[in-house]
Image (tube, rainbow, N blue to C red; front, side, top):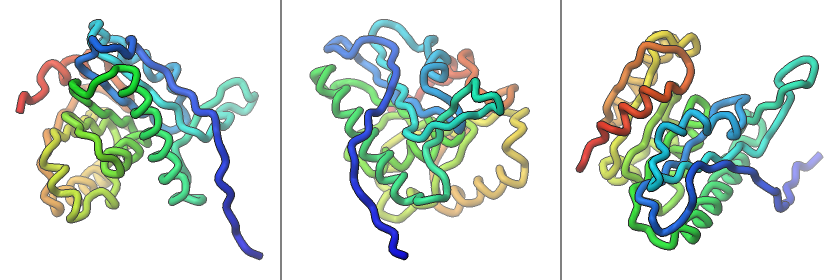
Length: 219
């Protein structure tokens, strides 16, 4: 029995806050977590809407029912099955979306921020390092950085962006053991990052998000 693959065209969904036009000064690409939908996830980012900021939330390509009575649907960026193909498809999809947004804005003179929440963290990271984009701020919120981006050839790009690890003190999904293991990996790599802790669980808190954005480094 042989495993084969066929490339197909898929219609992808995304949500945005703000209008993509020449007045845009900041763009946020935000990636939801496992079993979430971008329609609801993006609402957490209304706090960043100032008339000159565009927030874009792509939705993962794989959807499934998350309740026994089939009343709720969630999406997933990838599983262990055909993992490498999912990563490739995600990168292509997100890059295509980003280029569409740039075309609509009409210039590249904006600050690009990328935020990945939970499972969306490695997805956002992989896109950043598969693309030629220039990212100002990268936020890893209640997630981790994939080892395949922590390689020698990426060190220059890591040093050119501001990395923030955002962790909740009451996050029920991130144990002390997992946290210590993750911090050792990035410490061994020599990654320069800012650690931000908030008094909350495994969620995006708009007030924390706004505070972080207000205190971004200016370099």
